[in-house]
Amino acid sequence: AAGNGVLAAGGAGVAARSSGARPGMETTMRPGEQLALEGPPANQPATLEGLDHEVKSLREALEAERAEVARIEFSLGELFMRNACEEYLHRLERRIQVIENKEVDTIHWRIENVDKVRAGFSRGQFLASPAFSACGLDGFSFHLYPRGDDFCEEGYCSLYFHVPAETSVSRTLFLGRRRHGPMEADALKNCGVSEMCVLSNEIDKETGSVVVGVEGLRVLRSPHIVETRTKISLALPDEPRY
Image 1 (cartoon, rainbow, N blue to C red):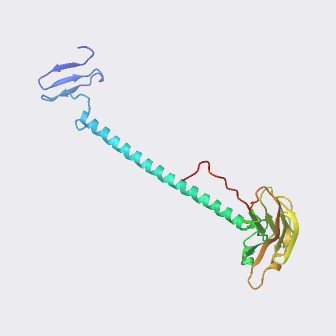
Image 2 (image 1 turned 135 degrees about the vertical axis):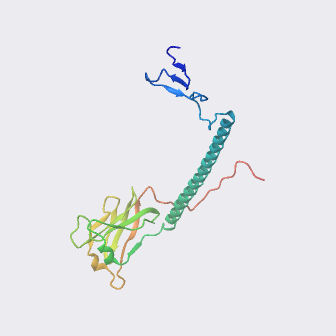
Image 3 (image 1 turned 30 degrees about the vertical axis):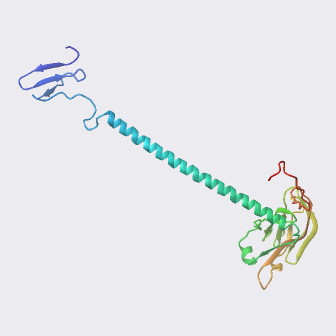
């Protein structure tokens, strides 16, 4: 039929001309050969049984993934609870320390090997003390500038005493034998001394250390101070228990 290709019978074979082939191009088929048609490879039969097996495998893999996700979520939940408990215990410990240190008004911070410490600092760099509690408040700390802050004369060290926000105190700072105070101070006013002393003059020659601290500390105003109780009132339960 015209337009679909021409099949011509011959003694040696059959010539087939496809409508998609270029003019003049022919394919010769030997006797006993068949025209190959496009279709799925013989080694990959698309059977219903094979599809069911593949779907089953995918479902098993999906269930395994869901189980793994559930295990991870459970582990993360345990980790979150453990971290939350540790954070709560840390806050509780700090709270207990604040209560225990309510009557503390003198703090000593000993710095060992002062010459070595000073050699590792430049002007304007400070060494921070651990945060501590005193007088029923938490959040105090010292900042020592071994080579001085940006405003002091060469050769001096600087000492700053940081107090909690919205808090005013009366304090006397000391470094070795050098004292500064008593003086009212807060987070902005009189929070430190730029030219506290010549650090080398206050080092203990026997131990090579120096003691930094505050004495006579007294809280004048603060919304954060811990109140101690001297009286507790107990109420009766709503319903009696037997």
